[in-house]
Length: 446
Ligand SMILES: [Zn+2]
Image: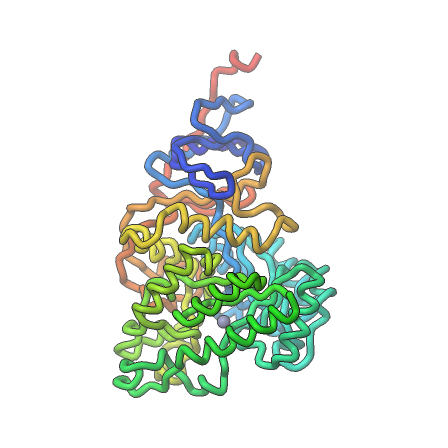
């Protein structure tokens, strides 16, 4: 494998406290050198990627996405989903188990891993179900799934509705050292719910989903985490009240981590006006006030990470009456561009944003499956290179994802991924990025 020198970029790596202009050398798939000075690769021919004016950081790590395979290949496959991830700068992604069949036993997990090995372009780490078939009745064989390599358990798409089951899962999860990831929703309050409950839902005549539907289950789960001393991870936090509950739980020492999506951080319920089914998502887009609380939570580390909840659907799925449309937003390819608006508006620092996309989620996953989220010397080279200031229009036709379902279609975003390197391989490159082959005078290598 040829050496690759990433030259002259602005390197930001929270895991090592690096924030400086420098260069980085990749050899045999690993990061072999990083620093400010000149470096001569130890072999005469190598490639140079010119990164002047670009940010160079660890590859993004996504703890929550839906790759739809097996069972829903018309929406996404591991091949298309991992390519979409690469275009979005993600080099490690964790896929949710609500496929068909669901990831509730070792055979299905092994099957997914075998497709990833042949068709995936970035690292994929599976999440197992909490309950058999994701039906909320009987616990999965959690230790079997742990040895198959799941990084946590979730019945995402639905909450773990049964408190006794949730308690058991947290108990076993504690012994296995793995998180129970809950989609917090009291479904008795959200039946037929279409969007955030408020004046806009009333005006549009759509059944509302109150913030309390989320907060009730967040509160229950925190109580169970306290009882069991298990590890609770709260998926896609969307309300101010949830942020307050998690903040208090962390102050009490309860073992809880939490994530927020790019869409919940940047878009409000107003996106639904006009009955835009591509803005239908669960939990729903909320209010400006919720967004403020989510950003504050992210800054204070009450919310640990950003996760996309990439949820592709077909155009036919979404081309229907609002009430009949499925929930979900395709997320990989717009994540950075939409999140950069928080940096450009002065609401979040670039260093914090990158930490919440790299180092922080890697701490949740641990180092069992590679060492994501760092540019540490000797680790497999997972690197994202982006232009923080480049403006572009979201053209869903250019997406690698089969899912074109985003309320950002046609919007102008500022900040774009220019190249992605996963385990030493250049898996995505924007046409404007220059990679130059160099051959040094062989005399120097006598
Ligand atoms: Zn969910």
